[in-house]
Image (cartoon, rainbow, N blue to C red; front, side, top):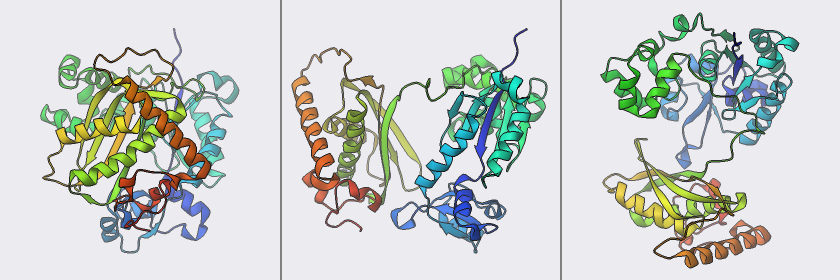
Length: 413
């Protein structure tokens, strides 16, 4: 009989807030929130301490709402270099027990410790040892232990902070099936709304639903949901060395003021396209598809995609296609709060490509050569040494991004 895998999911508790207290011990024990800058439209709670959580402060809510719930809320700005450094150090601890460590964001990792039990004991033993090692460094983790990645992740959410939960083939129905259906990965707001209409409110009901019906509702993802609810997840834990190459390159910003017409949006699209195109060139990829995400002031959003034919990576190509998507999917009855561009279906730049029947290949090559020269100028003389003249106009770009082009007249500095 084949032995089950032993998968751990380790989740750093209240990571940003805990890191802030680690850096400034005077903050310990206070209701604390790590927030973006409200002046830049980033006044969102990114993380909160356990003390703030008791007041009902939630990650993702607007700062003024959090302050209404907790008038004494202490706020600090994010420190992403510190978070990255701490995350690397914690992952080094994980690698003492296995080389199969797969990061899932900056504060979460899966570990496959199936082959480590003869050295370090059971999955619970390893989880408890890791919790203590992390605690010795003034951080805490919650750990889920299970026979697949999905259940391990769900387990890490059950005992917070600083807890271990073991989910087995014998107990997963009693532990997980009563939970709300949106506690499972891949079940977002839209999926939950659809499931509610069919009377599927918890994970057990999802597991007992017809997989054929779910597939009709959600396509291949419907079948995945059914498999996940029934413990049928065979996806491997991928180490950094074996993880697949990047499948997309993207960038997005929240604007300092709402965009109210196409002219304003076009400036932002130029800005985003230059960043995405530069990253594509630096990594040696061509993109075969483009996605545009349009977020409105009420935080609702629209995502739209198109193929890139032929594949490319020039900023002008990305702008042209993004503008076409914007015209097709946004009517300007509502302003825009944020825009994101994502170049996908990446292939290496030495991949043989079929020539476009309508021409344009020479233009694409000229654009890429010109942009490669601007890359060299920026590396030699600084990021603000050369940029599009249109970007001299007043832009709704947060100050933290303006270093890419230098200080622009009319921008907030």
